[in-house]
Image (cartoon, rainbow, N blue to C red; front, side, top):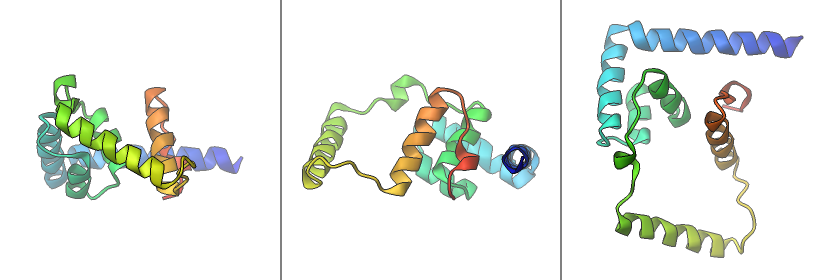
Length: 128
């Protein structure tokens, strides 16, 4: 029973937050500008989250709801940058000797990412 009530409150809170972002003039201007520059590939999601004063995963969800998405051409990394990231991932894996990285923030990020693929919003049930 309490889980249903909590879920309804989370859903309503998300709707209010989105409505405020869409209709509050200063916030709407910031959202539009940040969303457009994010879609063009000129801002990272961390920069957008800072501008909008929200967590990166919430900023991504809000941008998607508002229709600000990057094209695949903007998402692709140049080969040198991709190789650098792969090198860093390999070094990190070797440093932890192949053991899973169970940092809570990484687990939450992975859960949110996988649920977004399935079009499910799990953010209300994750710890803040």
